[in-house]
Image (cartoon, rainbow, N blue to C red):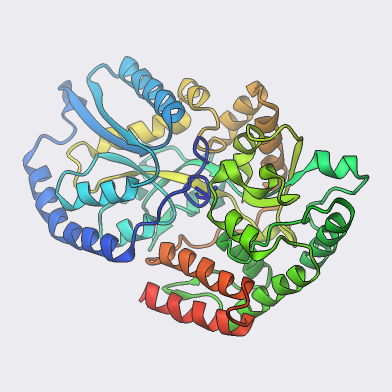
Length: 447
């Protein structure tokens, strides 16, 4: 998921479709942050920090992205906090995912950042690296921020350079969604968790021959598919401040999918491109142009809304320990906020208060608090939602350790992968040439 990034449930790595913020604009905005933060911190020092703790009123600014459904759920949860803490009210701002990070960079650079804001793993390291986010570690240590019920790997996926920069608002992981109706109608087997990549491609070829529908979308442009595959090869997307892979690794990845295209297991390049550029509501598995799509598990309900066919979901091919408990998105606190303690308490409330968690449900992914996740799972009524919860719960027993949070330039790395993969898909470059182009562009992006 935007993907990162779904419109109602996921993160911008597929969960929401957004026009990526150009690196130049982000750097320009965050460069201004470097100047604005000291000023904001100085101004904060002059105020009455967390006046509400002494009986005075606090008005906390909160900024998040999402659709109207998420806005309503979030507003209801914040209203519940005010009901339980009458001295705290909220200045609430939300917008669609597109343009959200432009707005956040502008607010921050202008010295008027929100006290509490939503962020994803595309940008957490960028903001943390410029001392924009508050280190929440001391609150964790004191118990004021209770993360004792979080999966360890989910908590660690918010740590940047040894500091807890963000707290997961929910958990998600990669999911291979397939058209169960199509397979059953043609007497074909369903894919299974643990099948190898070669087995998946052979299965997709079989589906294509029997149904005349390509068995699988070609995911060579999908960063999350490449990331899982790399982890299964003992590599990673990043290693410290450097890339965790070589051009040779990417060549093998592109060659794998060239072989799949040559065998007719995937759609033609124009249709692959359509899948690469479409939002979650138009993925090939629901438009009938492929039997599978590579998404985030919590996007199942949104996919199901756009097809009458029954869908299934399994892990990506290969060893499922290549996947991890990923933060669908985070809550972070501005380091210069006058009301840090209150902002942290709100994060604690949204993650650990039973009423608040019940209100929010799985809109931002599965609840981070495992005890409350179980309760939400018990009350879920949407079949697709129950299915995605069950699959992720099953996979949780097989997850590997979380990788490091993506580094500065990650958004550019994602877009360069699409460009390089499509060069290979259209035959404009060999897999080796496209891989070299990609790695060169990546090194420039993260420099």
